Structures are given as C-alpha cells and as structure tokens.
Image (tube, rainbow, N blue to C red):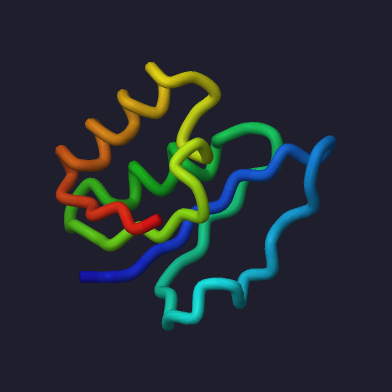
Length: 84
C-alpha cells in the first residue's frame, strides 16, 4: 500500500507546513490552501487501490463535524487507513 499525506491550511490563519514534517517516506503529498480541491484529487487517485493517509489533524478533512464524518466514511469505503 502506498503512503500519502494531506494537509489543509487556511492562508489567513497559518502558513503551509513543511513537507518534511512526516518523518516517513511519502509517495504523494496533497496540500490545500483555503479550498479542498487536492482532497478531492486524493480521493480520485485512490479509487483503484487502498493507501495509508497521514494527516496532522482530523479537522483538516472538513469545516464541520458532518463534513469530516462524511469524508472519513468515504475514505474508509476506499480502504484508506487514516493516521493522525
């Protein structure tokens, strides 16, 4: 299984994290600034095979509890293991 990382940053609040923060050998890094277009691309790219998904915080997956819950369900349906 491949290892991918995803980060979301609101450019008005914080600067994007350093890609080297993970301490793992990462196959792909998806990074969003303000909108979650890369998260949608990540989901598309993982349609055919499972992966390990590294995220800094669970709230990076959405702006509301419902949105985060829906994305977790969607990722789990694709056999993506979330590691925070």
